[in-house]
Length: 350
Ligand SMILES: [Zn+2]
Ligand SMILES: [Zn+2]
Image 1 (cartoon, rainbow, N blue to C red):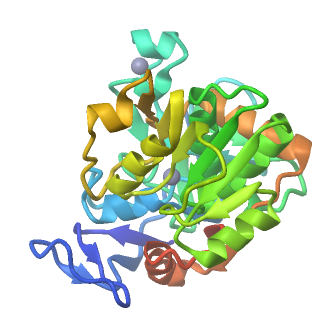
Image 2: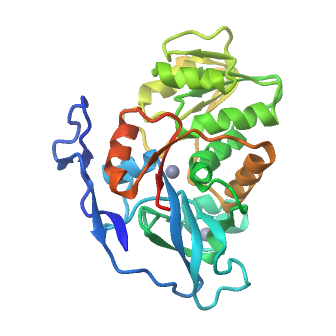
Image 3: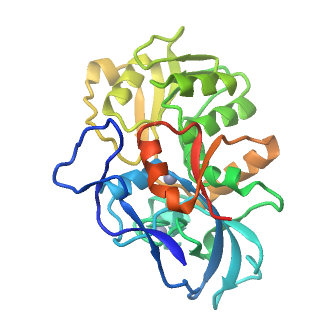
């Protein structure tokens, strides 16, 4: 089978971006497209024929070494596929051969530790991530643990569903951690794959919330307005009112402090990125005083994914996608790094 493999951590070389990590190789094509052995299902596992796989900014973090993974690895953790093999010991008849299912970042957890048993499997010390510790979906076939897949409704447009599995699900977790209340004002910083889904979720679940979107990209701000943002601006712009809640989706440290400056007293900021590429220079008086809270989001639980998929289908959420073939995966990564993707980048394999 064909797969895109990361064999060595490298900085992704993209038009107009200067080199940041001189100690790493600098490559336009950090993933190599290879013929790999067809995977088989071990105990408790299923094999999927991959239909589509979303491209996530975390994949760039993995390739550039900010997130440590097993190497070599097949990245890709927003996978929609059709079950073609069921391994020994899969408990029930779900998922059966021919069923369409999704795989998300949460590839396996221990199920026994205090975090797992408290509904916080995202914090499990044995958390295994798809496309990081387990091979992912940048391939014609992928293996998953049967307890960690999600039914995808028959007839769903699987290319549009793929971004819900991480961009949507992790954004949804951030939204839960932000503890929104109707009538409050929410700021979204950065408007890529995750934020464009979360804006729609907020508008459906909390119609009384005003959403302000901050982005450096004019095109991203236009998309935000189309999707119902109440105000849009550059991160340096001052919105009409202070924010009660904010979610920072950007890899830039300065955006975290900017969001905290714009937060009203008692406000909550959730930082929804796995790694920041520049430091966060927190100043207690300017950024935290008056009971402001800042917190991170780590991974996702199966419950987050299931709830988000159900909200998406109930309200007909629309993901904007830019489609690439498996052979174009490196271009998709470069476009994403350059913030040139409108909505989400998705590899379409079938
Ligand atoms: Zn992701
Ligand atoms: Zn655990």
